[in-house]
Length: 247
Image (tube, rainbow, N blue to C red):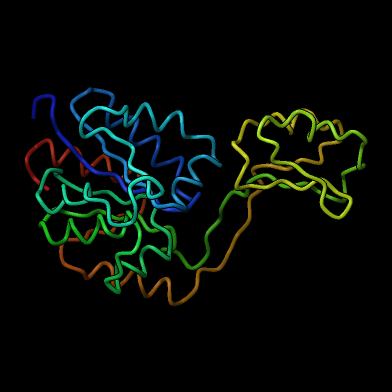
């Protein structure tokens, strides 16, 4: 394939499977023969920043031609650059992770985000779409982001976590510090700053997937031109087949 194997990557607003997908994408570009254009929904941009992965994303899609980071806030939901998929510029479109909301929109033909519009254009252009939904099992374990444990917090004055946060993401709400996750950039400084361990991060929690979300994944599997993957690591197999001329 030489040095030019262009693929498109859509990121939606899910933290589950996000780091695993980044790990795969870093592996894919390692040899320098794959170019990745990243399409982010508004929620996708937010979650990448929350998880502190924006700088890593800029290494995967470094800004060259067909290696751009395209965000919904700058491009709009109906960016002309999704037309590349209609024209077959990319060999495949990978949507990972795909939220239950994104899956539902694809299943029902709704294209009102940058990522769902990219999927619609890919389907029209005959470009294979590979989707990794977050909600595929009845019970899923996920990792929580930052929170302040009010049972542990001593309400120090001044609060060292508030003082050290470079994003000013921590403010007092109802006498306790509160972390605004939409502003947080995952620097982890607050964790070490609190002498009492009141800042919690990485807690595991299990949730029950809604029946309708499981049903939508089954509908997605039946759609023409779309392949559902169970885990981001399966993306590597797709790329290997693509390099071998078989998708």
